[in-house]
Length: 503
Length: 127
Image 1 (cartoon, each protein chain N blue to C red):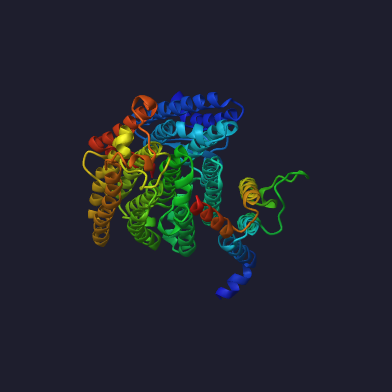
Image 2: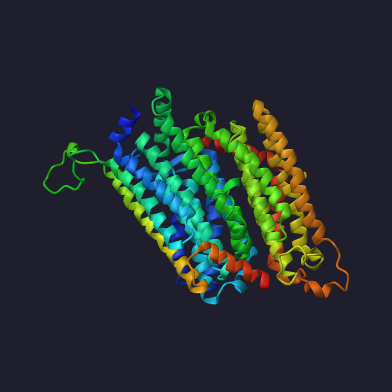
């Protein structure tokens, strides 16, 4: 017995793809409106599906086309997937609204509607990555996601962004090449493309113990591919330019959504394709754990040295990716829950920080360097407040979501003998490093400017009245962050149930 | 023994060597066009590998022309389908990469990635 709600996940994917095509011929005003309506619709439909799955108490699969399971393509829907889809679309809506003014200024008038084509393509590929149950489809949408993200960087056309887009594309293609090779190996070993069937075949391989080396190689290829695409520490060289110079909503989207889509796919590969027990036993997990820890340190250390607020936030993203990888490779199911909580917490916080940094820069004569941002929080009070909230959340103060994710990571590491020490030490050191650079930024923006200095900075005062939309966006961001921080219990329970349904 | 194994699967070995060549070219070449060539070699080597895995010696492509419907006389069609999908993906990626290259060349009159970075950084200092 299938209810009509079952069709919603498939419909959201198709709707976003279709809107992408339609937006290319719409005038930019209508494309913008339609994009907002689409994102709200996706959020509502995902919420409805989540309610359906919750009542059903289990996941369901939805076959695409008329071929049954081992041959055809299918999507699989559970509580976690629908929750992520809802969160992704809501966050994307906030990012799009938050960067709207900058986007109008920075992108050529004739290319405005193309931005929405790319944005719709991005959400379509993210939804497909969330829902798909077929590994080759996942590869195709990984590439789609890369292309959409590359377009979002290069649509603001000047030298820096074109160079950043080229570097982004080159690194991401290396990553997807490795990922494709890993997928090919795994397909060769298992003979299946659907994730459920692959898992059974992988379990057989491990039991027989014949093809374990190729299996580990294929896992390693996929993991390294995704690690390059998500900017895990040694592969982060493309991050600061891509996040630092593209238009505001693109930076927010790239750091909040795009990398999270890939990491969700990696979680899916771990849990659903290979099986979490098998992954945790391989050396791949340990290597990834170590790189996660190094990433937490090095990202923050690099962030301290930055003179530009957007580049600082970009390096901070690298550090936060390290947290997520650390949680994934603790080897406990609770570690995965912590990692997913950190994914949503970081999505909300980092998007808020990017939009707030844009607001602060706008109040300082469009300069992003700290030397110009002095006193910016007094010129744009709401952006200053949002930046403060985001910074406190990133540091991990109670009330905010960052605290809960650090707490969850610490709890998850308790179950795990020797890894506990390293994880706790890394969290402690990284918290101190986070405090150094975020507090430096907060102190700079809250330092009053003397009347003589005002002319040098060339700032202007942006009151609440001038930017009603942005104030609403900031309020929504702060609200999401505090809801995640204050009422984390039901969310953690939801994620735990979701993970059980997921694997 | 292992060497014999490798010699028996020489085609797979070749495809992996090609993957390595393509990967290092995409990563290390400074010239953008050479990078793109590397990208294509890399992708194609994976398709070669996939096609090899789907091929069964002595059988034909699964297109029924002479009325033979037995499964025993055809190769596995799924890898071929995957190769087709992959080719579409790599064509679109190459197109985007080439268009970026054209834009960079028009603006900076060079294809060397390092030179482009140097020019951009110099422009930033003068500002």
